[in-house]
Length: 227
Image (cartoon, rainbow, N blue to C red):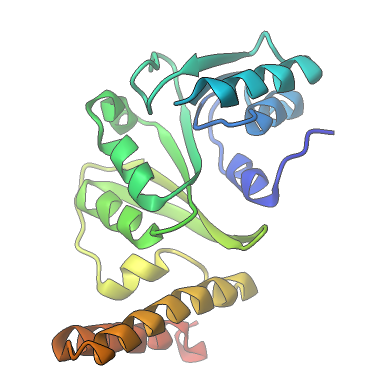
């Protein structure tokens, strides 16, 4: 059995097409699973370092999926041929790194009916902001429990930039009724409380008030009356 994690299984559940590009594939467990399960017909699996690709080769051989998966040494989309790609998965990176990959010139093809599946480990609010400002809409978002509780986003290009509130930057399209959302947001609130305490100690009253206001907005968003 392919050792695929809950967060990667969640990514797999958001696929729409047959030809997938997995950026930062590491051991290529996700591509191997997609082929073995029949969720994809072809996968382009990339990594920026040769070491992970060498590990990926072992995975492909072990699960007999070498023919349907192409490994590419590439910094983001730099060496990727975009022809035919229906879905892009970028998982297991910080939100700022994912943003930079999507913003690179070679990523322009993602604006042409490509389904994006994004799983930031940190700074999800940075990624959500960039998506909104650059004409990408969140289709759905879900919290998933793995070693921690993470968020997985599905997005697509609409060409219509949006302004989002501070609370939306942190809450996205997570479902309030999902118990895992509460756990995920508790982590967000803890980080914001720590930030607020540091600002208060530093005497930065204006920034402190801004973070406190954001925390109030998040509390209102999580309120049962909003469900």
